[in-house]
Length: 235
Image: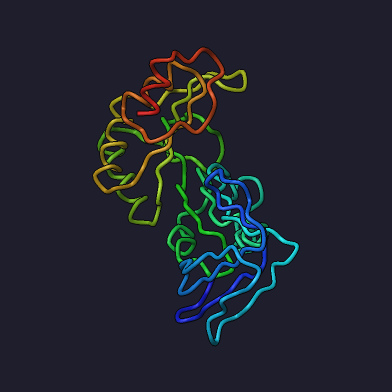
């Protein structure tokens, strides 16, 4: 990250721009006010006055990686140092799909320059006694409850909503979040311009989620996925 009114020049590195193009050698990248100002493929650098120069000779310049599905708090216990570790290793955005405490949702969105950007769902919305077990779920008891809890999560700072469309996993049957609750959650979130991600690992449940217009499915499907639903997901 850069600071306001500052210029950073990455000098003489190998550039992989993320477009699929071949890497370019001896490339200079000029960054101003958190934006790329210019990219020059030249062994001689046009270095603006009063800029900070980082010699990237022998190194590679590439876009930050995005990890779209993690559960930080569940696996590691959540704290800011984890976001700093991600950033130091080139992962500049992480999407946590269940487990970040409510109190951290807004705090995490206002990241420090040395932290990865956090896109977080907070607790996972599920049917009473539904999947998953543990403290990271939020049970939805009615359609009104679905609307209320979705609005509250977004007000708390959730930038994505995670729903659990799961009725059999790990050799155990689970109550399934009902279609009317799913539709209420999705419609409420979309009215507030927030996407919805659905846990689903079997086609019968993926179909429910896709028919309700969720924005993505968070897992692969363990059984057969018909081509027409692949097309629907792409659309």
